[in-house]
Image 1 (cartoon, rainbow, N blue to C red):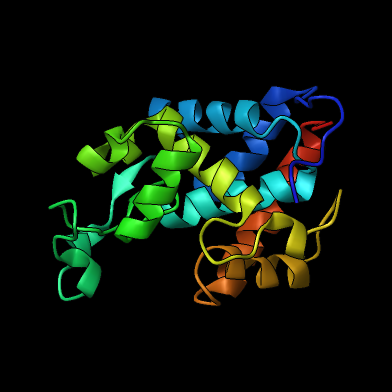
Image 2: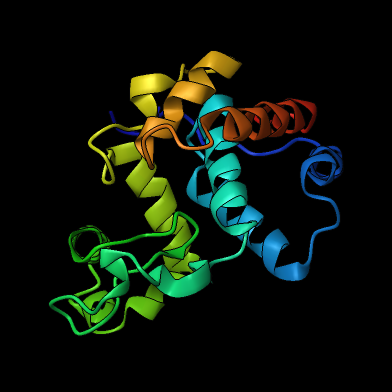
Length: 193
């Protein structure tokens, strides 16, 4: 399923939204604010539930800043160099792993092989945001996307729990669902629409 379409959305009361976000995250630094703003722009056609789950994923996986996986995949197969001579550990906001996922992101974002030459490009906020938004929407990671689990407007905790299958099976699904519920509340208070 592609983006929900229709008009682009924005926040009618950003200060109220950010107050709600800080209820989840605590104080935000400038990088985190920039990532949130980038997500709001890139996902401007997304429903409240979709955006809430995107924010929850970025918070859970990377604390709203593109990062390298802690431990860099040490002891895991993707911690070893792959066919591009680089370790395939997680990077960015969704912790992109494995050569095949870097290949998909490079192709879909029309990067012309740049990401395959330097997996570190997944740490650039613009690229990390596009990987999260397009990947979650278009089912890049597991063959399941946002439209498989979340409704056109508000989601439930059960739906958010199931949506973890978009990224990584069911690990920590309940905790991420709670983040999504709280981000959804912040979006509603902020007038996303």
